Image 1 (cartoon, rainbow, N blue to C red):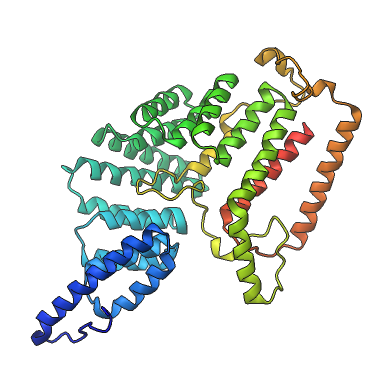
Image 2 (spheres, helix red, strand yellow):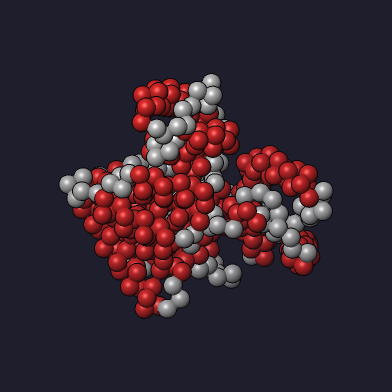
Length: 425
């Protein structure tokens, strides 16, 4: 009804009728946004706003809603174009500049474009608005940190990281109660191996927001760096009680269990990770596979675990939680994949019981001690590793893009690699 009653003429004599029709249509579309967004029906919402564009010339509210719908529906390239139009209509509004920067950083991997959007937001924001200004400086630091990862020359990379640290410190000064500023300061110091400073800031982040997952994750890694393995493992267990379906935490748990309890306990956790991965992603992946098969008549291979979707060539987003407006998830995968960087290297032939204390007594339900494993068990483990490597070789030789989100397949690869490492050790 709202579409049929739209007044398309821009003549002055139709101004009142045009305003009346637009107000009615806006009210209807706002109600649609509320109902469809709660059910995550973003594709329907996008189609609705595409039809609404015919009577939304220079109407910033509808363009804002359209941009938000595209961003939520992972139509990232179109979302960035729509947000550019929103900025043209509302040049003094910094919020949508930050949203555009987030899409550029997190979804499209366009770091320099994202920094340009952050600069636009900094020009718009008033320094007296300390909270918003702090968030702009935080985004600026994030962009410079990401740019440092992409820079090959060490001198330029260090220059970007130095500027990023200045931006993080400025964000902390403007908003001392922002846990994200403390978290990214801790992350920055951790990457530079300044463990004491990193621990101080991550504890401050947890003081400001005790349930922040990525601060918990970083603190666990820092404890493992200081060889406080049992304390780190206790913290992992507590974090998993709050976030039982977090595969990154389970990855760290398996690595710590290998040190504290031995490889058999860690292998049990790895098997649990495979079960959880299927629970989280199987239904979505099967749906994507069936869609691709119907489009391409089943000509594509859908069995190799190394197949990755063409549509997800952008950098993966954070762990499978929904994106938050604070952009607190940008570096979750960087933290997860830097376990080897932050944690000390454990030699294969080290005497772990002498370093971490005696092992618990064996019971009928407890796994055997690694030293009691038979030669037959080791040969079985070696054969399993050999079989897995042969599957990897055959999969890579017949590589074809596989449907589904990039993040899901990356997680599965990490679990396979962890399992192979545990069998080898």
